[in-house]
Image 1 (cartoon, rainbow, N blue to C red):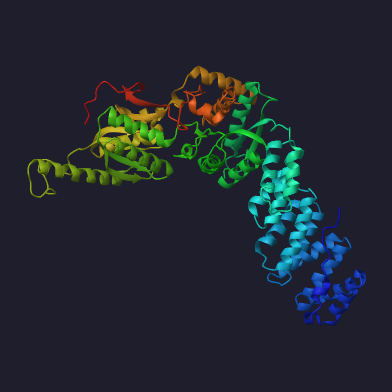
Image 2 (image 1 turned 90 degrees about the vertical axis):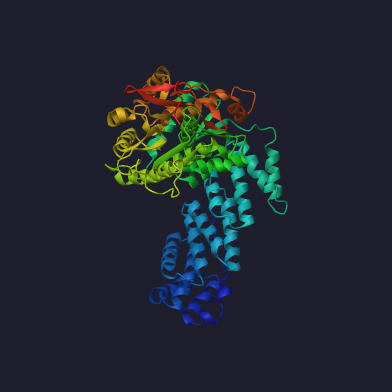
Length: 595
């Protein structure tokens, strides 16, 4: 490989700082082109005086000679030692550049170029920046990096307009070589748009060479964590998508591209940008976790509204609101809370509510959305208390909630009898012995067992009223733990939990035949399967994918029908407990006399 290190003029070092005889002698040898003699002299100084000024300069000159003589291992050894010891040397940029060049020449061009870009990012030395810039451009022009590596560098180090132009041009070339013509056009256009750049004409010629070329094979990007703590969920998502792909009959007509999000927002966004700028991405399945999904949705909803994103399992509020092309297949916590609030105010005619909310994102989200929905319907949350799940007893929390409500009811009794002191004790309403009623009490438990326990304790601590909840209530443990005390409770559940069993059985059978195991209970594989199928079936429409998804009434899913409203799956059901069994309601119950 051609040596990339430019001839560094040692004459620039010929000042009084090199007054030491041995170093001066070596400098003369180098000026005369005799590095072998210079090396003999410099090695002695380097070994005997490394920590001194003469040794510092000798190390720099010795490195230059080794690079001229193709002695990469020796140069690497010296630069590594120098950089470890001389943290603030005037020659640090020069030695970092030398180390980076050796790294490239030893077969690690990405690491070498990254080190060079780091120099450009921090160095204030014009000469060092100029030398580094020249070298990094030579490496880029040598086409040693692939499109993914180049994309990663441009995101991490936007350091110099000319260098960025070269990186963009090379990404375009790499995409063109890989027949990713859509991506190639994108990058060539970015370079060509900068008319002041010397690379603009080169980029325009690149665009001309693509005339008549199609955009390439349509690609579905699947974003999931394939490494790290959540890799198991990522594998389930990939399995669901691939099963749908194999059943679709689109193999050879549509590509599937998987990308590791690492369950990290920045990684998910980077992988999305790489894929869209390199491939003909027409839709995205994922990310499967709320943080990465929100990051990708914000960028995609602003910049690429023609590319729909369907996150199978992200449930955080508002992700679907980030663009007309963003869809959440799973029902969000936000909508579950709205559903039970709407049911309670409309069907049960409840206007006053208490809330017991578990600490954490789930409880905060459900409580916030429930309160907003109640307020919109003219109701009011009159008491609120947090609690920490996992405890055997919640006496303190219930007594504090009870105390707030007791004071409210006591004031009303005093108003009714015309008392002047509205806070005065009322003989007919004893704080310790009287039941305190909340017309509606939302207990936002995350699991059925906890919900049953809370229902039991609310009765024990003399708090009455209609109990309300969300999907965390749905499960046999609610009936076991809560017994008759959960009778007449209402809670909102995704229709995904109440779906056609035959549809799920068919999916489960196919999944086991393909992957040798049953789909997991967490629904990741099934919801990912649904997301992929929604895309595949929508491809037959004459409209864009985004418009097709927004204009469709519903989609048949593994766990139940999926209905999108402004990107969110709004297909929920209200469940109640009647005679120890779950009952799904269609509309309001017959009795609506609660107040």
